[in-house]
Image 1 (cartoon, rainbow, N blue to C red):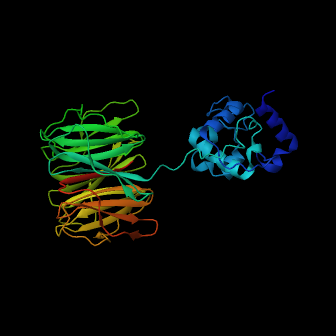
Image 2 (image 1 turned 90 degrees about the vertical axis):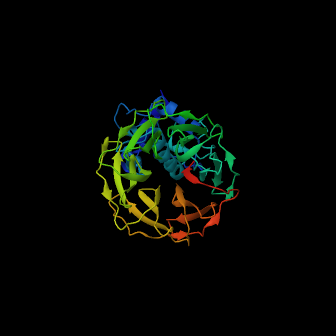
Image 3 (image 1 turned 180 degrees about the vertical axis):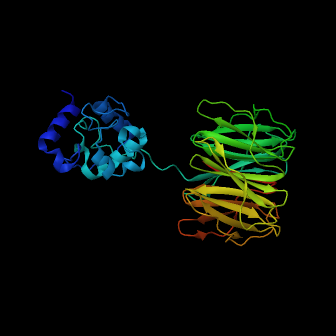
Length: 409
């Protein structure tokens, strides 16, 4: 008889009604974490490795056969109503909580899987890094990586296979960084950087494009959404799913004209697009890629005389930064889970003479970069969990910078 079936008989005999749980913790060990490979072994015994299965008696769900009591008790309903409706990762995250509380003995299938001895974190936090790209005085793109945990920067190195660049944008998907550039022929080119640091060559974007003035990019999951201002001052967009997909053709973003500059940031599966109109005010529209819909463009409150914008998101909140007509940086925030815009206020770190800005985020921290009137790149970090900002400091190893772009990695 399979171990999972034996376990079900034992838990019934011992009084499932008293515990409300199929996993009752008969033997509480010291295990508090396990690798994905170990959880796969447990799932193979429990469910044949089927993460969407429901037991024949309707009491146990998913790859690890978690019952509804445990699923609810350990917070699983934040992901789905039942384990079998959640992803493999989500099921493992809840199983980790059960393991820490009840031990490996909570699963009769655990002997021989290493569950009681494997203390690896199945989903360790990725390193907190940003990638900063710049166009130098030679019109070549350079890139540097910031390790925010270690507080170190790599040197700026030329991105392979690029010349004559006018403008850049960047976005990251799991396992890769995607860099886009406008060449001196006003066409868009792209190159991808893998996690091991290797670059592909720059290739023209397959989607037809000519006369491009400016670009911005944002990612939702494995998909990059690229935005471009055409020579008619309208915004166009194209998408690519990097899990085997190809580029769509460029199509016009609804309800826009007379656009001078754009920026984009994503929360969940929605991209928030910001534009500077011909009246030097900032406007915004949202693309909900789950529903396939766009909102109309509306003015962001409390702004005039804007020269340039950038944006970054922490959780459900977008932090919008703008260079005013006094060459100082201003910022406003909006929580897209029912919140409204704050007023634009001067950025906390003292700044002046700013030519260009870019931003990325890691966790609750926004990394703001600016090109000063000395053509050097400066950086400052805003911790939105405690409301503090660092001072601006010079990013190492840079001079003669024309343009910048940033993304997390």
